Amino acid sequence: MSGWIAVGAGSWLLTVVLSGCVSRPPEDDIVRVLIRAAPTGFDPRAATDEHSRRVHQLVFDELPALADTIEHPDPLTYVVRLRHGVQFHDGRTLTAKDVVYTFGSSLYPTIIAARDAYTVAFTLKEPSGTFLGQLAVPVVPAGAGDALRTFPIGTGPYRFARYRVDEQVELTAFEGYWDGLPQNAGITLRIIRDEATRVRELQNGTADISIDHARVIARPNIQNMRLTPHASFSALKDVKKVAPYGPDFTGPSDAGGGHPRPAPQAPPP
Image (cartoon, rainbow, N blue to C red; front, top):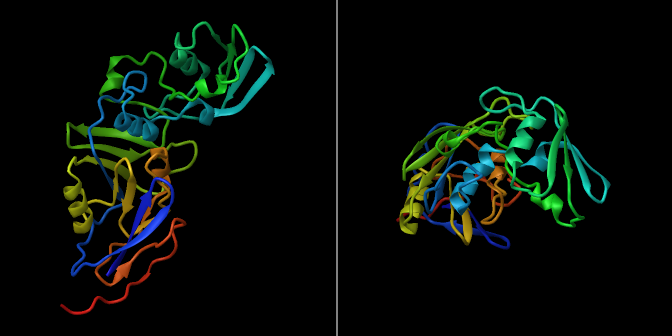
């Protein structure tokens, strides 16, 4: 017997799955996540479908996260002061130039100007109570062109490694991430459209987490699993995999991660 975590759209639900034999997952620290469809592109300015956004959430950071402070000195002005020391995956340092380039003409008629290397001013034509929400955009490197569609470079917790078309997206933990190294070595998003096949992959130990529009299911050796169907995939950076286990092992049984414990033995067949 082994405990499984199933997360619905609104609350946590623990279910128990009986199994005569539990396969050992791959012995590495890569978290394998099953998704229902392939992303259409990796440039966050162009691809807006659900599965593309999930990749963006792992590879890029939105502007509010990269801001040290956001000031609103008058009804028409917002001043963003960037964190120092933030790096893109190619080693470049994030500056105000990248922010100005990212927003470009998308906020027209707002005027966007770099006051210095780490300060950007947004000047509105008229007051707006929703403007801060418009800043929640993934920041891309200045001058990024069409290559971003197939090989994204961001400041996020994971670095793009490769995409096997219609099979999987492979990401590795970014050692230079400004908010600390992720708790796992990487994320692989495997594209499996059939629900029954996704369940078999979890049971066989060849996948760790499965997500669809209604629920998230995680294997018992996954800790700190706080991902829900509509949450940002950036939550995956906190996920840990405990040691591979056999049929006498169960993992965390609640949303907080918990501690591994021996599982009750299943009755003999």
